[in-house]
Length: 170
Image (tube, rainbow, N blue to C red; front, side, top):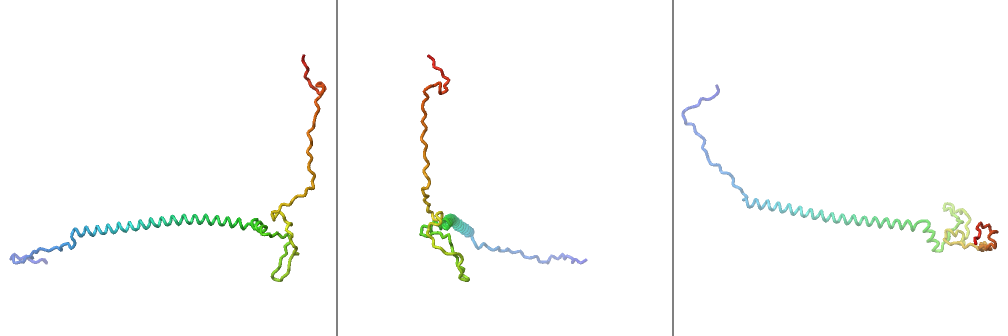
């Protein structure tokens, strides 16, 4: 067997027991509460700053969206005005107001070789009255339509001659 025999002599020394000192807390209870209170206050202040910032950004975003909508309406209105002013009819009317007259006899110059296509003619201004807005005055070549006079009828002198079926009673 491998075990050592136990001696009964009792001279065996027992380990001495000693008091173990535990380390004492370096922060008191009041200090711990103060640290927790500071952390909570800092957290609340941070949340308040973030929520205030988010609220301000939300108001700014709302204002910018409203402004973008107004600018969109203004842009659409200006585009509509531009289209109405630049239409062919509006341009022709404005040209007429400036004293310009449409030319039904155009002549074109070919810039590559300098040739002229068409025969240029002077415009008097009354060639196309439907474009200039001038209303041609019709000549009074037609005779006025005579209005017939109302026909007069003579009252019949004899009722029997007029085909009356009524008979007089005394």
